[in-house]
Length: 269
Length: 247
Image 1 (cartoon, rainbow over the protein chains, first blue to last red):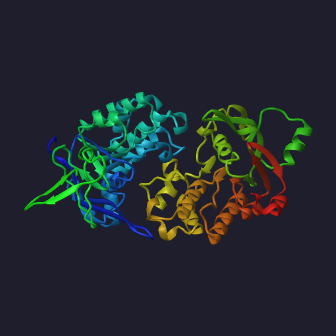
Image 2 (tube, rainbow over the protein chains, first blue to last red):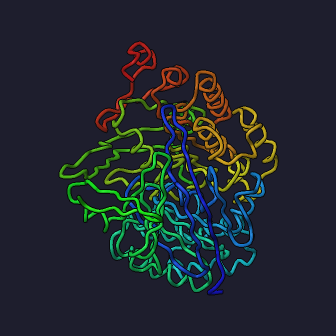
Image 3 (cartoon, rainbow over the protein chains, first blue to last red):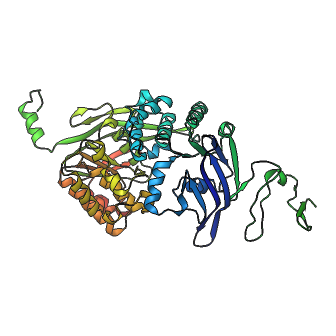
């Protein structure tokens, strides 16, 4: 399992067309997400995090590029097969779980419904997962009777039941106090042992610390995972994004550019 | 049906009015917003009878949504009592879809389920009900959702999502329908369509409590309650209609 790739994307481009201009939310993102790992995706607002997560969760389609989840190239699928694959292979955790819980259903009914959608027929898995998430004592309670942290754990339970290949979570700790957030992260690490790959967008340093690795997004492109070499994308106008560490060299925001035979040198004046 | 003997006077009083389904007495709810306390619901008493359409009007932020949430049991009142068919109810949040069905502004559709599956959900989760499928198809048809039935919520407009939530709320023919601005995302044609469905629901005996900004809905209402700064007053529908844009 450790060497399996739960999901991968190559050359992901996402362009939103508005009345006045095209917004390039993603400018060619390549990444692979191994099974049983946690990947944090960080970057300022507008960096493309949400676009990347929505595409990884197969709720949105890329303008160009391809996405594989498990053995399936999902970017090539039509609507119905895509929906089947998404139900089976991808779990999604919303930022505000309360908006996606149904007031009429108990905790157990929520998770049982998600299990049925994922094709998980073994009912004992639902109770087992409620135990792992420490909400078994709440199984017959409805959302309004739960704390925010408990609601978030129900959201996680729905996302991870039936062992999907990939679970995508959009800032899952944003609305939680620090203790509840930490508890959730412990749960995530327990769940990776079952082989699920987590991709979590976050501003939360605790999530970054808990993740096996971190992808930095800026202006729709990934910065490389190492500090010395950075893979960057040049946009149509010829602009390129400098990594934050390089930026500190250019205090007055001006640069001298020298083109040599096979490389370009950018230096402070 | 009650074991308690009733006096002749009580019996007359009871028989002269329709079945009281939902009753609230002296409800209050205060929020803490930053440094100040906001009294969103202040000493509110109201009732809704079977077959009645009650419109709840008032400016934005007047407490309409909070009042519905408290009546639904989704939020706890600081004070007051809620009665269900004449009996005090500690937590109305434990009522089922067949008792009190609510269309909140957030709609609460299941993103992974198609329009039809969302509407069928209360049927599938409970015991199956004879004629359930026909009821689903009829509601889909009346609300213009038949051709969208296989789409996901994300693939249809907000107005269509709102009509899906309304269809789901009505599928078990609940005793009470509560809806928060059910025409809020509808065009003129579908505002009329939604009103028709609510009117039919009331004709079937469903007690309807509808928070709204829409004059058209007020015209359909049997009674109008106006909430302002959390306080409730009954007003005549004609007066609200005459006041026009003060909704």
